[in-house]
Image (cartoon, rainbow, N blue to C red; front, side):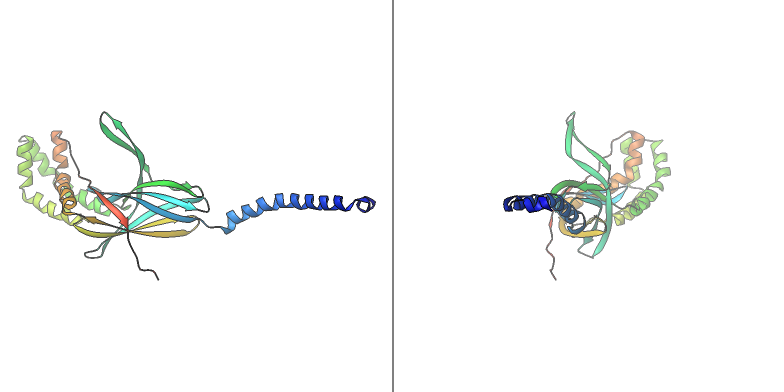
Length: 266
């Protein structure tokens, strides 16, 4: 008590300010941590690069969409990205989930451009930062792919018989005109989701604890895109024949423009 009583007014003020400064130096970082950890929520945004690629092969109809994910205000984990594609003509929907992530960096090897892929998995986006999401979306149950493979399996015996008799061009012509091939082609045609016209895409991002946000986009398939994808139907059915004759297969995967879709606001 004597020490306090003997302190001058200046010393008391100085000591008080020091105590307050020390307290604030402890409290401010603590409050900031509490704010970031428990109060602030991440605000996830999705930006498409404007490019998408359509596929139709033995795995059915699927799509790659190139985009970027941003997390505003807080670091978060992107747990899953899935999409709902709606064909506007008849409102038929295709539900797809991320299956593979594609590296945005490509390498040229002997004149051929090569990109690396990996199985899609949750990834972390730092606060106020971006992460690439070049993603292939496909049917995790592969329901259409199973149907297509079963259809192709029905042609194996006929393909083997043709292979034993004649050269590739003769074998191809004989297979293309067979009744079983024509029937199989009609069945696989029905499995192709892509046709000329408009499509809506809802990109659904699951992140954080249980947060979900949807981003509306749209694209258009031209007659040229449709024509290229239809070529893949024959390619699917003659793949085994090409394997027998050691002829390379080629599947078309047209690139399309994808853009934000306007939606009605409540």
